[in-house]
Length: 220
Ligand SMILES: *Cc1c(COP(=O)(O)O)cnc(C)c1O
Image (cartoon, rainbow, N blue to C red; front, top):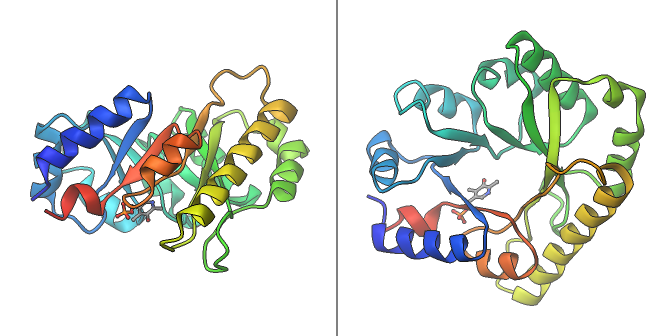
């Protein structure tokens, strides 16, 4: 079951820092998610479409579901009717498909661009140059059913907090650059999704507006 004292502590800390908590519920059973919901949490993150498809219909309809893991284009259709925010946009092809499915559902889907900031080569994400190319393209201009509201990144899996801090600084720098270049007049481009159980305080210090926390909340 979730650790509610820790949950309230983390939630209070984040509120003080005006950052949002995405409770990462991947692999957790319905009862545990329900317990956190009953404690007041409304924003949950899942990393697999299949798992989200199983959980979403069972749980309360006022939950804001975030997709935080790698997303394949052919699976967008399953989550398009309700997904609140997609953190993991890493190609124009995926963005095109999200736009198409959002249109079919008569809605606009908010997205974050995922950047590769870790030293590990296994993590997904764009480079600044790739994002600039994407945002300058004619195709992107034509997408009326998506809205890019910020950036997301995952730091290296390491105990070295200096390295993690440096990677968060890199993501903040990318956010600032894109804001200046492409989103100066778009107020909704304001989110920096970074920080997990082990590094969320460092992330907040480096400008995070949204942290994704799983194990700290659930492993009691
Ligand atoms: C699992 C996961 C998290 C949460 O990690 P914890 O260390 O359990 O807090 C955050 N972001 C992504 C993309 C994840 O897959």
